[in-house]
Length: 75
Image 1: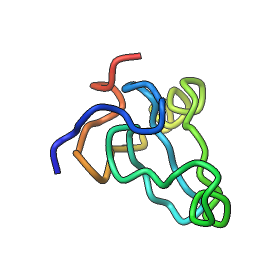
Image 2 (image 1 turned 90 degrees about the horizontal axis):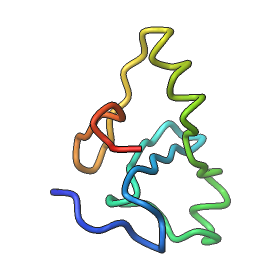
Image 3 (image 1 turned 90 degrees about the vertical axis):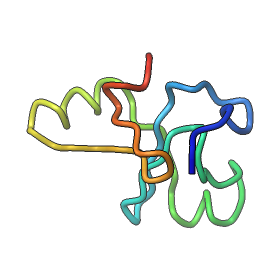
């Protein structure tokens, strides 16, 4: 799926992850904030500081919906 406009008033650069390990940008398959899925899977934004730490440790994170890597998601 190609990225579209961000959902639910989020900004395009925001990236989210769930306790189950799913990662999406605000333009793809993100559950509605406050929904059962959002709450039960504990969705939260990956902050710039957390993303920097993942990069320092050699981690690779990409949106599962559109494939964008956080380095390519403008902050």
